[in-house]
Length: 422
Ligand SMILES: [Zn+2]
Image (tube, rainbow, N blue to C red; front, side):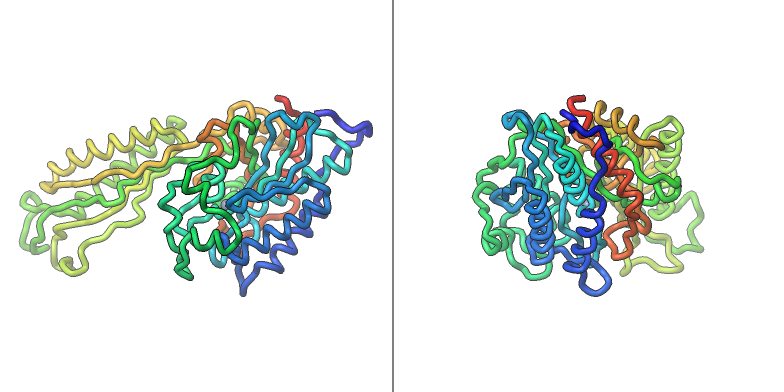
C-alpha cells in the first residue's frame, strides 16, 4: 500500500466509531436490550446507518441480491483481488450493541482514516455489512455469508421466522431482495477475488477481562462434534434392596463416563491441545425416576469442541471406547447415537503472525463461538479475527466494550492493512 505524502501516522476515525455506536444504540434499542432482527426493521436500520456513513466518507456502495452491503474504498488496481473487512449487523432478541456491529464500525473507522489521509490502497478495501448471522430468527446461522458464497441449502428458503412465522423467501421478497441465487446456489462473491477476509469482533467469553488484555488474535474457530441423543440404559430397582454387584445404575455409569472424559480433557489440555467438553443436558425419566429408586435410564448430550479436528476425533473415539468399557463394568448399555459435526476453521498463519507482532501485548486464543469469518476461511480465503475485550459476555443487553479497547484492536487492523502485501 502506498502511504500518503504526509508522514503522520494514520489513526482510525474513533469520532466516527463513537457516533455510529451511539446512533445504533438509539435506533435499535427496545427496552433494555438491542433488537436488530435478521431481515427485519432492526437490522435494516443498522444497514441504513452504515450506508449513510459510507456515503459521507465517499465510499462506493453496493447491495447484493440477498441484502449484504458492500462499502468500498477503491484501490489503485481495480482488478486486483480485494480485502474484505466484514461482520454482521443483526443481533439476537434483547442483545447488546457490539456483537457484530463492532466489526462493521471498525471497518468504516479504518477506511475513513485511509481516505482522509489520502492513502490509496493497492487493491480495493471493502467493508461488508453481512446479513443474518444469528440463528435466533430463522434457526439458520450465517445466512448472509453462506448466501454470498453460494453455500446455502435452498431448503432454508422455507424456514419460518421464529416470531412472525414468515418464511425466509417471503421475508426476502418483502425487503426487495431476490431469493433466486439461493435457489440456484449461485455465488454472489467470488472467493478468488478476495485476498483476505478480516473480522473484528467482541470476545464473548471472560478471557480478556480475566487476563487484563484489550485485544487478542484468534487462532481458529472451534468446530463441534456433538452426540445429541446419547442414552444409557440400566435397570430400575429399589435403592435400598439391591447391593452394588447386582445393580445396573444408569446414573452412576453416566457419571463415570463424564468423569472419565473430563480426565481426558485435563490430560489433553496439559499437553497443549485446545478442547472444550460439556454435557449441557443430562436427565433421568421424570415419569420413572424416584428418590428411592436406582435409575434405569439417562439421556444426555456430549458436546466436544476444538480448533483441531483431530483432537475432537480423539475425544469421540475415547467416548465410544469408554462407553463400552464402563457399560460392561456397570452392567448397563450406552447408545451414544450419531454425532452432528461442524468442522473447525483455522485462521491464516501469516495474518495471525503479523497481527501478533502488531499487538503491544500479544495474545492468541481460540474462538468458542462461530463467526462469519468461519465461512470465508472454509472456502480457502486467508482469514483473521481480532477479538476486543468485552465484559458480561454477549447475546445480552449488558455487553460492555470500551472505546479504548476498540481503539487498540482497530489500530491493529489499520496497521495490518497498511502492511499489505504481507
Ligand atoms: Zn457476532
